[in-house]
Image (cartoon, rainbow, N blue to C red):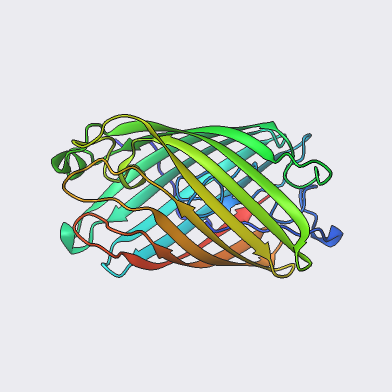
Length: 289
């Protein structure tokens, strides 16, 4: 039985920041909750950031809903839907479901991965602490449950259908730092044993222990409505049958309205199952309040 079920409501993408006072919504500036990453947390497309989702201040509750669609040249398809709530710019909770189409590797079949997440801001403010060199730092956990573990992941050597990823995220906005443009930098450390984010189960015949993996990203606000950025996330390589590579993207985000954003991106996921060089695209969007 599925733990989480969502209808396509709105969309996923990547983050943006502006200092324009006309862009206020929910009393926080446009984009200051980030967007939603592949596992449902507020951040970029591939990695959680330290930012708390939504536009709520320290006296408000904000939130977001998202949908994303990604495809690779090997015809793997990923569709992810979810929601997140941000409480008083301090605590974030999220829930998402990813559906991964297995292409001609297993024709007509897909894997469902459900994720519940929590994130807590422990110090700093990425936007307003401009006179302080310290970044905003958050800690988080994501519980993932693979509904179809016995179907493909177990046959490939995965050791478990569920797992918990732990992470520390640091984010810092530098106003006017890049030739007058705002620059956002992010760095993460993940403790994980998830195969392909958990889509192929957890642990394997090569490794079945938690290890720590880094992730980094940077984004530049080109105008009040456009953001350009890139992310790199390292992942476990637990299965001897197929090698797993790091994930990388280059994205462009458009904000047609203060509560809506849409992102298109080039993605490079390396080897997925029996297919290598899996590059492709994603199109995603999000509604924030």
